[in-house]
Amino acid sequence: MKSDSVGDPDASSIGQQPSLAADPPDLGRSAAPGGRGRRRSLKFAEQYGLLVILVLSFAVFSLLLPDTFATTGNIKAMINSQAIILLLAIAVTLPLRSGEFDLSIAGLMVVGAAITAQLTTSGYSFWIALLLVILLGLLVGLINGFLIVKVGINSFIATLGMSTALGGLAYAITNNSIVANVPEEVRAIARAEFLGFPAIVWIGWILVVIFWYVYERTPLGRYLLFVGGSPNSAKLAGLRVDRIRIGAFVACSLIAALSGILLAGNIGQLDPSVASQFLLQPFAAVFLGATAITVGRFNALGTLIALYLLTIFVTGLLLFGAQPWVSDVFNGVALVLAVTFARLAARLNGRA
Image 1 (cartoon, rainbow, N blue to C red):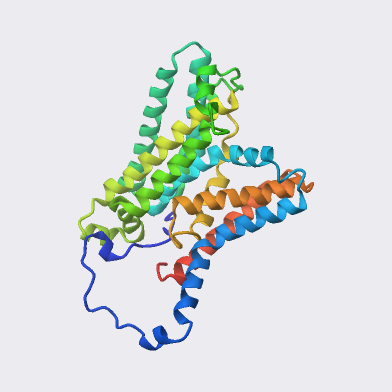
Image 2 (image 1 turned 30 degrees about the vertical axis):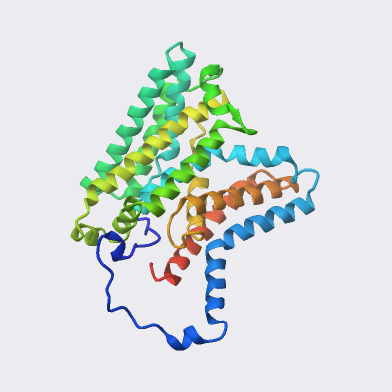
């Protein structure tokens, strides 16, 4: 199923020269008193509205729950709890920008964690586990890309089937049991602290910066949008569409598989049944993030803002005494609303 990538880049950004015969400026509107200021205000609200909501929601919960919400420990806990989700969310922006879904990310991550936990607790070198996890990510990405791009299978169906298969593989690797006592060597990779935050958090933040740069400052970011919005036009423009689409799946799978190592190290054990807990939130964050910063397009900074906004609301509700099931309900509703808002934002920007 096409993700209906939330936007197409302009033709001029893919190597074509912008037309000199552009539409004439609306002199009346430009000269209207306050017209330019209103447009700037609307653009600011459109780009940074989600960030403003995040700040306001944090302030409101801090005022209402000063002894529980507005504490250093709780803030760190909220950020740390979303580290893995952030990695998966950033990974999934790749196929989404190219016009496809990848539902196999959570299952792939758990298999990567299972390989790491099982091998290292059995006395094998961490580097052997790392090599196998990298090979796993590359293999799954290539299979997904081949089935979807070359064979033509719907990406939703193909990656959902892959996710199910990977879930079974995780159980096979762990012998249907929880693998405990992951070695300190693996735990240190995820837990080593710097400036008060564990390495897994910093890795996610660094990945956000890298993907922001790639999406907003390199031709590859524009190519992904062009391919996702109009593959046929992209081919006519000379882009290697199939290679770009397959590459998006491979890169996404590689990040998801490596996230499994961090998952095993961060928790210190591996339960093969946890994949379902990591599937909904990344997509909710990515789609909601498409309504911020680069409106109408899947982007890294918007994803980060959206993820922390959802975390603030869920944490605040739980601290108010809400039942744990509220988290699933809230994230499910947030995903539906996020997709709706993303499509509306794309239409309002003329990129739907």
